[in-house]
Image 1 (cartoon, rainbow, N blue to C red):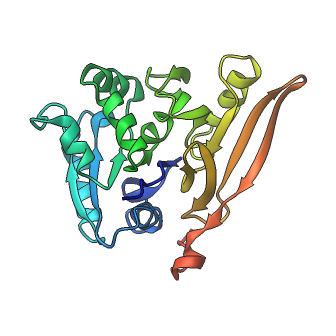
Image 2 (spheres, rainbow, N blue to C red):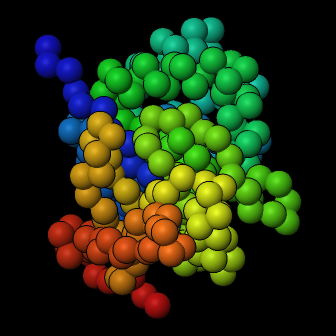
Length: 244
């Protein structure tokens, strides 16, 4: 059997938790498994396994063509690795990335997910579920501050979600990179997903008209931001543009 290529879909914002009436990103995520009815596991670690978040996931994905489940590290399965590898896709929710990484490392879930990625299990998620896959991320895990966080390193460079959704994200990301506190990397507006095949950025897609991604890098004169136009999924999947 031919091994599937590793894939990660890192979302700056959007999806079922932010756009409950706009399933474009979630539909795109599921489609990348290549399965008609894939098994998808929601990992809500960053939210402290919020019951509300989990219920929203089942409500949203229960309407899509998939077999949804979730993983709790407070009520873990007997064999964590077997459970993870049995799924076609892993969808990581938003919340506190610093706490997420600490728990994952304690349970060795970081190693399990790396193995799953190599074996072709689709990985992805929103916000914390985006930056966790990169070498570094800009996080608000410490209340009142945006700081650099060392992450899993499956993807090179740094990442910043909510680039247009939170007013301090763009200037702080550029400041951190310009001052050498963070590696150059990729930022994504809310509603934008960065689709990686292996470690290569293969496609940028969006559930919102006009939303974009950006390559941000340190230069001799400071910082350069380069816009990466996203493909709006509504045009390709037959959905009307979302209401303003």
